[in-house]
Length: 117
Image (tube, rainbow, N blue to C red):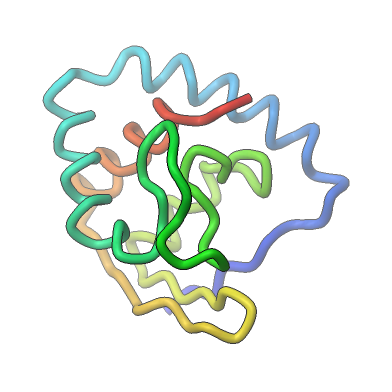
């Protein structure tokens, strides 16, 4: 199980750089990979998070997915998603998720594709 915590503000510059790099990777992702990633997000995450390019999160303490790269590099999620991500949203615990490598690739490609910069 991997605990994932928000990174300090000093990493925002690195986060922006990596978001740019991952943005190119998302553009290279196939439409099918992006569809799979969106389906994973909808099935596992949409009860709490806004998973699209707009809209509010159903749980106000759960960040919209389109803003994740503002908080920390999305590349940091790869290991956490594969080994089991455990996060709290100001006292509200998120269920633990563990995805296989194909699911991680699809979800990260989708997350990268929707980031607002």
